[in-house]
Amino acid sequence: MRSLSEIETAVKRASRAVGFSWGISEEIGKSIRQLELFGLQGIKNLNQYYKEKTTKKFENLNLISEKNVAPLEAYCPIILGISFLDQIKSVENFKKIKFKKIAYPILFLSFLSRASEISGKKIHVRFDQNEILLNLNVNIFSSFLNQDFPEFANEIEIKFVNNQDNFTEVEWNSLYKLAENTFVEESESLKQSAAGAGLTDND
Image 1: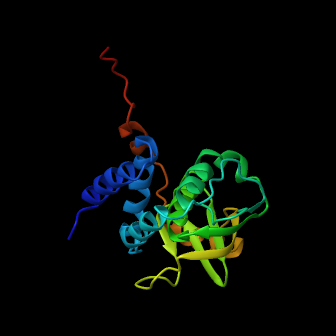
Image 2: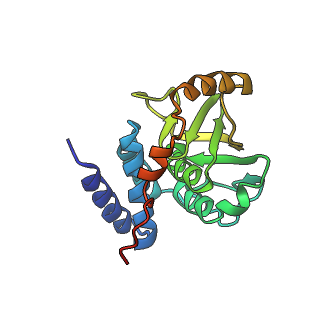
C-alpha cells in the first residue's frame, strides 16, 4: 500500500509534468492526499482528467461570483479549486454559489474540503442529484465510498453551514447538572496547596 506522503509527492511531480506550476502542483498533491485518506478515488480521477486535458481545453475561472457558467468546455476543477481557496474570505459571505459544468468534480471537492477547514464552517454541496457534507477537512459525508464518482457535473450548488449545536439548551443543562456532581468544593487546605500558593518567595 502506498503511503500518503508517497502519493502526495508523485501527484505533485505528475502535475508539474502536465504543465501546472510547482505552487499549484503542491496544492494538487495535498488535495489528492486528502481524497485518498478519506477513501475516495483521487488518483484514478486525476489520471483520467490528465488524459482528457491533452485533448480538451477546459475553462479557467479566476474570479468566483454567486452564479458561474462555463462558456464552452467544462471548468477545470483544479484552477477552480485554487481560485476557491484563494477567495475563501469573500465567497463564504455568499448565500449560495452555483457552477454550471465542472469536469471531474471529485477533484474540485478536495479543494472545497480544505476550504471548509480554513473558513471554520461545514460546506454543503449539491451536484445534480447528489448531496455531500464537508466537515472542516476532517471527513466527507457522501454515498460515494467505494463507488465511481461521475466524470462531469452539470450543476453544483455550494452553501456554507453556520456552526450550531446539535442539542437543545434543556439537554445541555441536564448533562451539565450531572457534571456538577464531580465538582469539588475548594477547602482552605486546597487553597494553600494550589500552584503559586505559599508564603515563601524564592526569587
